Length: 76
Ligand code: SF4
Image 1 (cartoon, helix red, strand yellow):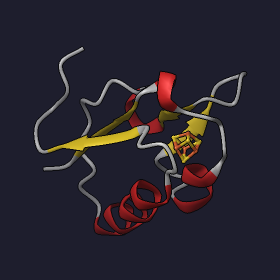
Image 2 (cartoon, rainbow, N blue to C red):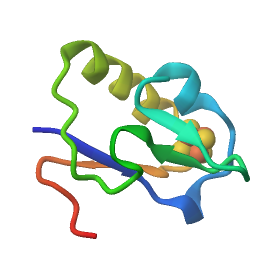
Image 3 (tube, rainbow, N blue to C red):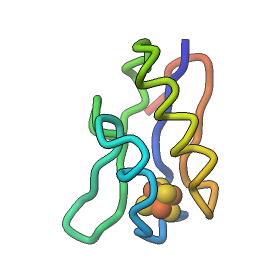
Image 4 (cartoon, rainbow, N blue to C red):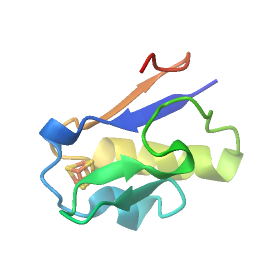
């Protein structure tokens, strides 16, 4: 399984992840991105193949490495 979240301290609010994967990433009032399916908790897997493709695109596009991924849920 694939899990993700955004490290807000690394996000420069460039907008690329939301452009590449609008179902997976959104922004708070300051423009800082978060993982949309579970409010950036990293607990909900990306299990839809279409979302997995979009995720890869967003992950590779992020200029600061703010999007992190792992195969198990993130501990909060
Ligand atoms: S692509 Fe990266 S730096 Fe840009 S808004 Fe998304 S998480 Fe932030």
